[in-house]
Length: 151
Length: 151
DNA sequence: CATAAAAACTAGTAAAACGATAGGCTTAGT
DNA sequence: ACTAAGCCTATCGTTTTACTAGTTTTTATG
Image 1 (tube, rainbow over the protein chains, first blue to last red):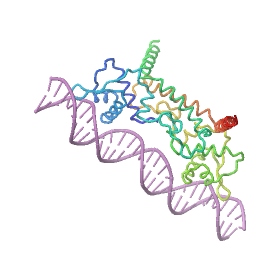
Image 2: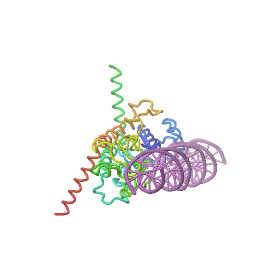
Image 3: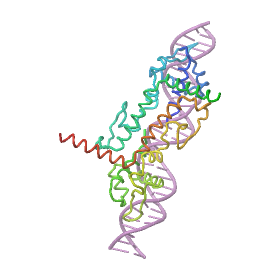
Image 4: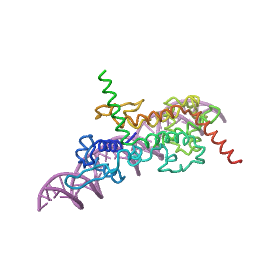
């Protein structure tokens, strides 16, 4: 399961991506809109800033805004940055590979073979889904339900 | 990341599946062979028994053995039983679905759309991979490396 | 029937992770 | 100078993780 922190991070980024202008958004505004505890969100945004996805402006009229285009930020990057590796086993992680201490031969580890497939499938999806993709998917879905409603 | 408990469970089941006869195996033997803390393994085997995958025999010459055929036990079942749902979000779980408290419209949740795909991909793999599949994959891999070695 | 070897059961525990919260510090418009 | 914002460090209660300890029950065997 994803942690709250990661979920909040993605929700916040999607919300920021949704606004057309790149003007600063108050933490408190974002917190309220997305029902995220304000102080917790503060830390999360700081992390996302350190990851290069957001910029911020201090002082009056300050706030947070996307530093990259929505199409440049993938869900995979967000999850990796906040939650950690996508892989379910350290020994199949692309970004944080670590050998199992007691594994005599990685090539012959059944667990590894299976969970390597899972990791590949997961990263194929998450690394190819950007904030923009998410937005358009939601919009399409919205139009469809709207259409259904009008039949 | 999978917990140690889940990893141990899968390793133990693979080890038990590997023996041709269904004779009882001592916890201590299994623990040593797979380098799993004995007392911890004890609890895990108890869980797997409760899940119907293992049987046990008490007293002298007792031990654990598979109750089902290796092809009847999938990695998905094991992970779900020990770790919990495969899904990364409660709201896309097949086995433990739960609505997000603050979600105005599930159909229009971007997170949900993306992580539903991830869950589908994951369960497609894990629910279609049995202990038998794992064993044969390892054997094939073994023969391949062996072949490479002899060139 | 006594013994010993095994699983079954009940508790407990240290360390880490999770999900926040508190409060002071710094920066920048007006 | 004032004030509204983000920045930074610390802390906290709870839950989960990964075990460990000790006792009880079952069962084959001498």
